[in-house]
Image 1 (cartoon, rainbow, N blue to C red):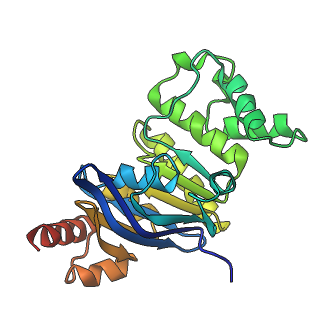
Image 2: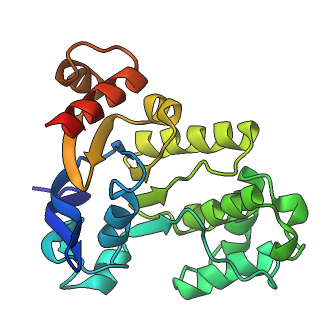
Length: 247
């Protein structure tokens, strides 16, 4: 049996006496776009950092394509790409240089590499400024450049923390269409977001966390039932999180 692209098992993270995440269980099926929702401070970014090996869990496991990231971090990290909410980019490089830097970093094949770089730069509408210093780019342009490097790698799993922040409407639409196309090709996308309209449009499954606990996980129709029949994702989200706060 093919392992799940992402499986979180009893994932818990404590910082001293504070429990940031408590016994989180989430499984992502192949080809899904899973959205992670929750109020500020709910534990979304902590979850992303644990999934990608940037933090070590207090207890629990993270399996990436069946590989325990704690036991074999190098092999696990070959399976996914991470796009953080504030990615670090070498500003004194040009976009063109940065793409080839990433290619060398990940030992990508040199066969047809230049054509692939051009393709991604064109896809994300930054080919015309490919030889400009990244320091001159807006936040949205930097975000598109990071996404271009992700597509250059063609990973099985893409993990994103607030991927639409800083993108103008045209760029946001372009990125959403790319995500949908990748999902149709069997790629797996896990993203955290505050934007409920993005989650509604993109996600086949949604996980909602509050105060570090998973309070709901399922498809839109499943969450509708959990919420007692609310129709919009905004109403579903508010009902579920309010009920969790009252329990």
